[in-house]
Image 1 (tube, rainbow, N blue to C red):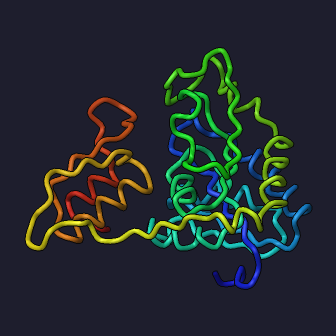
Image 2: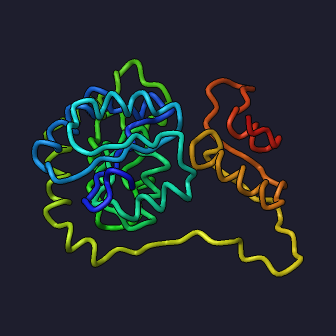
Length: 247
């Protein structure tokens, strides 16, 4: 944990590959600025893929206390290990959100209404999901231009800060109810190869790294699905993993 050792930590993963899920870098910056003033004893860790490093750096610009930007430096397993030490996770609907929930960490999420309420929420009852059910909810758009992401832009920094306050004020109660899930080897009988595995979200931080780890364990019969930006486009992280290219 480096400079965060010995202190409670807020973990934030503000990045997303999907415009329709993006709450906005300036909103994250304002939220973290307020939280640092309100909870000065906490450290800050930023997580995500390498392409999330810039937005994370912007979000944490005014955080004057202990902080570390780990975007692009941790595997999903290492990210999960870090999250086990978090008091709260902040972010949009994302892979790191689900990792945090699996580790029993309370999540405060600026959740896009592109999907139906509750369908992709983090598992568990300890979370604060801010979801504005606008008239266009359930659109399933990857890019929102006509409505200008109204479901997200209507979520205020004050709403998110209040939700974080509710979590951190009850942190000791939540800690006692955590359910930590450790990833282990696939439960295969000795010498038995698995059938075809389906990995969804192959374009993302979790999915592409999962494919890489499966390949490293000799498992190559994998069907990768994901949100592709254009018809016929190949997801580069998953392609590298499937082809064994690590450069």
